Amino acid sequence: MEERQARTAFAALSQETRLRIVRLLVQAGPEGMAAGAIAEAVDVSPSNVSFHLKDLEHAGMIVPRREARSIIYSADFAGLRDLIAFLMKDCCAGHPEICAPALADAPCGPSAKKKRAHA
Image (cartoon, rainbow, N blue to C red; front, side, top):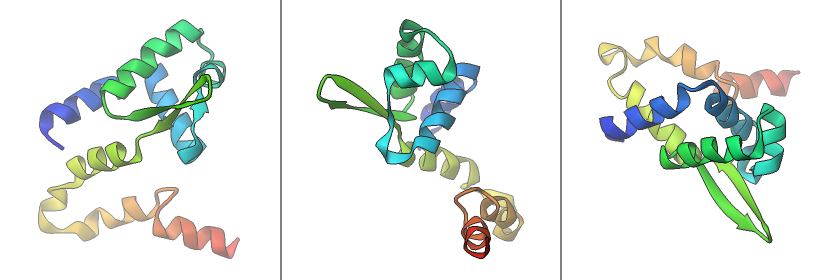
């Protein structure tokens, strides 16, 4: 990811509603959600959510797909990974073990999977 793309993504995510939408779609997984369900979940009008969805799509944070007469939105997991990789690219001055605990404690990280397996 280039710096310009990262700035666009961060700008999109810096707005409260758009950040809530991305987090919601990450939770929804690859199945995604229809625009109306997203609007209801984040408590904004359908026209307002359309504005935010367009901005997030432009920033590479979400992807739309058509299913019958609905448009389903999903998190763009590749775009999100690229953004995280952009941040972590030069991690910890050559000492990646410093960053490892933060990555391991992520809800999808290796230690989270171990915690779920032992629960």
